[in-house]
Length: 292
Image (cartoon, rainbow, N blue to C red; front, top):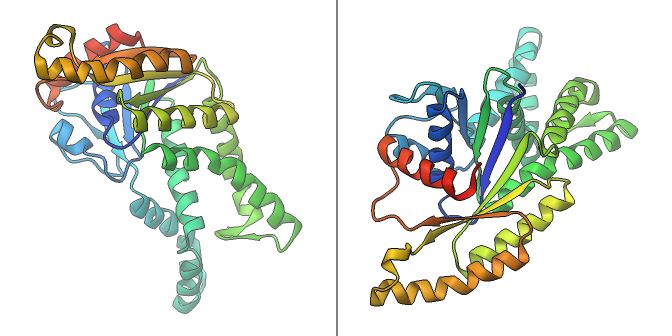
């Protein structure tokens, strides 16, 4: 069986880290070897699991078959530069290496380095599932759009000087092939599901719908929406909770008309979603709500 991918994205604060973490725990508890990756620089994944998260994959304490990893742009850039410059250090003077490193310090190299780590996470056949806790939606779209813009950059460079911002075109051919392979996986609905997490509120929902349209343009069709933080049914008779529910309900109804994919409803929890026991509870609720 090929590795399957779940991407959780949405406006900052919508709850994607909690839901992606809960899903990863649920999959691991079902016997699926699962990798949970965050590409969000502001992620609190370490707090959710109560352990350190870094660029190297770590096994989650107390959850067999679950592993976590953080793609940090700064760390990814440094790792990429170290690998790229290592051969030069063996044959060139230090001042030449420093000059090459300086040229690799721009945003172009950082984007490619981050995507390089992203691709490495996707091409890990040892896992049944890879679950991505992505950055807020705009950054995620930029990341997913990178392969097509990067391909154009390579083609233009090949027609000109043969140099890109991180080296020669020849040296990047294999990487481009890996990028193209990743894009094909993202566009394959049998392998990849993109899960939008939204609050039942105007700004969060509108951003989600705009991003959904952008993903359709990229050929990513298998999309799911989760409306998070909905007042539970047994709380709706309370004066305060009932007032909040009456504000939420029209947005949920509107989403059902404007979004063509599956829609799941997740309740507002009284307790913070952190710790394995709470993640298991939320994962069970999520499976019932959306049947991922």
